[in-house]
Length: 270
Ligand code: BGC
Image (cartoon, rainbow, N blue to C red; front, side, top):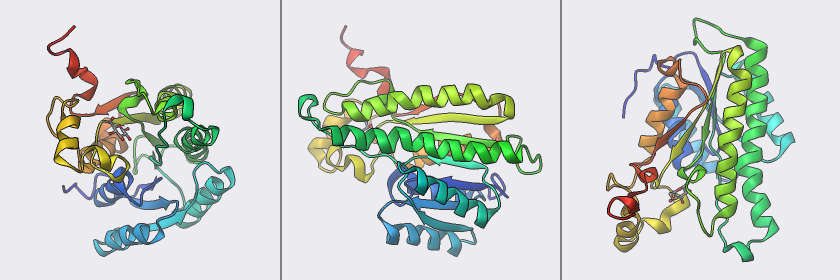
């Protein structure tokens, strides 16, 4: 996929959880659309550095920062490093997320807290730091018609209940109202806040659901489009939401799921 390198020219972006999967795809795509990118990672330093090196090799600008998004001090440090390096920030992609699955009655408090901490509290902490900078700086019309853009990476599980994954589904349901409430509060300041809700996308987080033909066939029963998504499907939506092409889009969730939220089980039932 190639983008116009002018689409996000002069913009500075931070993508959390960008050392693999959807975050990696988004970081690479924002860079090819002209943005300078911070590749945040938690534990995969080498992978993050490889993405930075690839972006630089293509004449882009990037650097990697280690931070646990659920830790307030680390998030604050990551944003001050970003501002020191890039001067400001225009785009935040709140992507970092994990699954810690367990049957409900066996789910430990630690599994619950870890998922809520990273997937929901982490998205709150990063959005707050980004919003402070957007408000401080205001609109720079030559860069973007918005003072800043926040993109949440949610999931179809912000609306589809998910047995055995209640911590994950609760975190994504929480993102929905977090996103909308922030969007409502910040809209008068020309800050746009939206979510992307991916369906089943081929990444390490759900490998067991697609890495054998049997597993993939079972997964496809849930996807009217009859293909498992790839990270580019999500990255294209992220580039659009980050750009002024979506200037009038605020407080909405864009489902990129091949129709998973159409409840395909009802096609011949009910
Ligand atoms: C989850 C994946 C799952 C997909 C569809 C995503 O949010 O992380 O594991 O395959 O939703 O159920």
